Length: 360
Picture 1 (cartoon, rainbow, N blue to C red):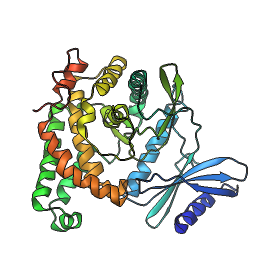
Picture 2: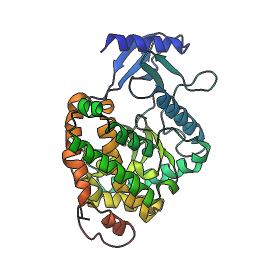
Picture 3: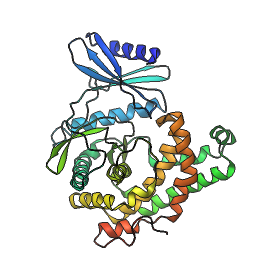
Picture 4: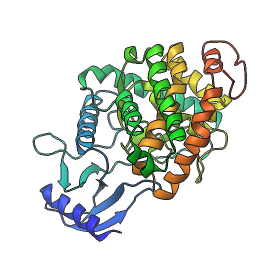
């Protein structure tokens, strides 16, 4: 463990005013992420989680955690009252954040976990995931008007990437030829045009957690299904259309199951297992046809923002280089052959016209 980061965590703990002595610190960082996560065990045996971040905007990090803390409080009267891991607050009720130079620390109370989903989900698990996510989204939607918006939006992120690609120094730093940069810029323009045409500005914006990797939440198994039990990790928090959560859900339900070596293909949206998830979600919280069509643009945004623009923040260097190369060679070009209409047909009553990706 990096000694300087450990010392930062210790100083952050002291700044909370908590007099308990730290008996042990254990690193829990994900091997693909640039964040550092630690479990602190105190002398009384209780635990707390510390996350250290040093990338992006501190303003966005602070604002996201303020919104999450408000969401947790607003969900107290619902069945999701204890679902989200609490963020440590100051005595005045505001989020505790400790910042030094270019690094900052936030603390989460450790939540209990129950069962974890298996690497490959059974059909009943897929149905449960669709229903549970729909119910969670409904609860979040009911309180969303009491949450302020965030400065960070899908459009602002895509516009930022478009502008950066116009600078020779940025292209050189990323190893992008003019042709490759123009390919990415074309997809930025396509996202903005298609999102507007599909009604993005009219979609209700709710708190979404985006990364539904099966290591980020636990469930309570119930015969062939489950209920959400606890959730942590807020790295990709957004206030955006609910379907922004769906790409990671497609990866959770995919036929090949959880994999240690991963790529970000769009194919998972067109598997029968994802159609099953969509139908279960739709039965609980109806979708509109344009929300389903928007899934293609959600995938495009995921590639543009989380892989190309911000990949060096979210992934360790070896993963980042490979994923960014795949984004330009495979992910974005594949979108020229994709139509969401088979999904629209599947959700709204007709059989899909094709299994897998349909050429536009």
